[in-house]
Image 1 (spheres, rainbow, N blue to C red):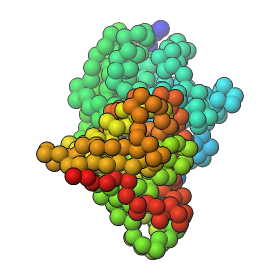
Image 2: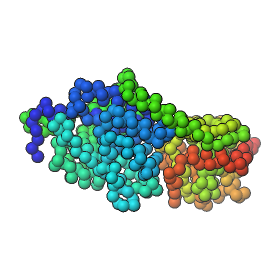
Image 3: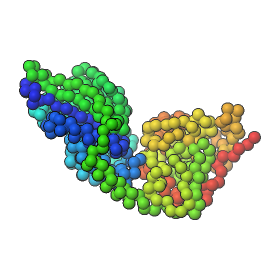
Image 4: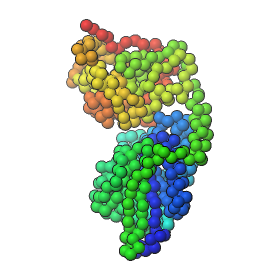
Length: 481
């Protein structure tokens, strides 16, 4: 294909953010950086895109505005295309996403998500697009990480991203000077895209929070990643060689921590913050007595959550980690905002079949300081430490060990000793199926996920059940000497 040889007209700064996770102040600094670049380079000299996971429901402004604060900040930054990451696609329903993105002044791109009802993409979702900036025709193709078991419960069909990207590259390559993949797939998959698909010039990556100070070059494709939380803004300079017409690309990262928050973004944060506070001030429950929480040992609030997950999933046993809860609840009115603050993780209940010896292993691990005090990140977990396992449907006798932990003496389910090879229905949390925290819980089979409910919704339901509130103070663990 013949390309323009006017180097001045073809120079373009491609700015990219990823995995901001509702660090909204950083989003405001990104807006300032993008506007600074446009003042220097002109409107046609800059193209800004976001690679997904901009939204995170742990942030009260995002929760209380249903995500509209994030879209408003992207609009303020002049975003020109964005990809839904798993934090958008799996923590909001399909209808909620349509409402959120209705406020976007930029196209939403994803080539591997289809509406399960129709087998087609909804009108608001495009597989890719071509934008012309400074005489350069830039094809943008979006793709997101495939979690079919979760997406299917929300009415989506998620397809193989490599095949979907390959199809779009074939469709758009002839219409573009540069083919850029906006990939919320993670660095290992980005490398596969470059290795297996001809015709990709640049891959802007996210999902695995990879920070590439110097882009990787794989078969001529430039792989970039700006880390996480909006701490860096990625920059790729695109241009056509004036003599050969060949595309040239070079990338680097821009630190933004020292930048002031853009004035328009600051106003949006204040406005949406007030809206969120009003929305989250609504009462969720009223308690006659406080419910204590201790991440290192059995406590009533964690027991209440374990009982709620057990009932919600229809299981024999409930197992949750106390670290999902960031504090106890006082007596009196409990607002939705307080409940969100103490249980911010977008974690879903699930049910599995698990043999007794795995249950025993996990519960015994939860008595050890190296487990209940373990710091944990990712997998939807938004707490700080893993915390001990809270249980429901089990009676446990344990004795202290010399190393400061404990060992199981006896575990009973339904009044009978837990059988090592017998399978039990266990209601627990989706993050354990990914191998986070208590690894024996990854060994379950016939896993069923419950979406779109988060565990704070389960907890809210339990807070309004007098019998559940009475039972949560009854001990499940008994110390024996």
